[in-house]
Length: 93
Image (cartoon, rainbow, N blue to C red; front, top):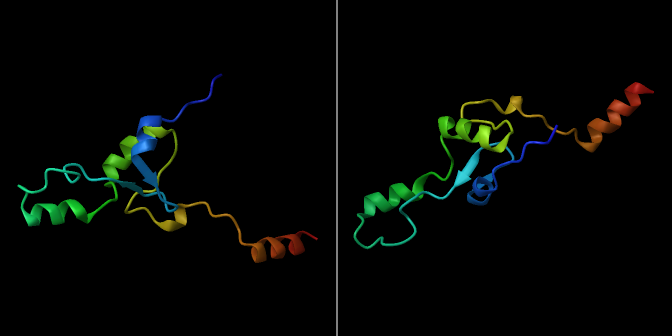
């Protein structure tokens, strides 16, 4: 059976952080800013991270699990540090 391919258009527009949050550019902030109020421009600058429901929608396009804002860091799989690996090896022997 063929493998699932992640959506390349989405991958070019977002950046997935190590913690699984999704960074993106906010719309309407690139140009034509002279007629926009300062308050509106400040708010557009504010939060580059995607909200939980939107991130959940992207999971289907990317075929991978993403950590949301309210999800604990303990839900992430972390690779062990070299010291932890050494300790695990010693316990096995």
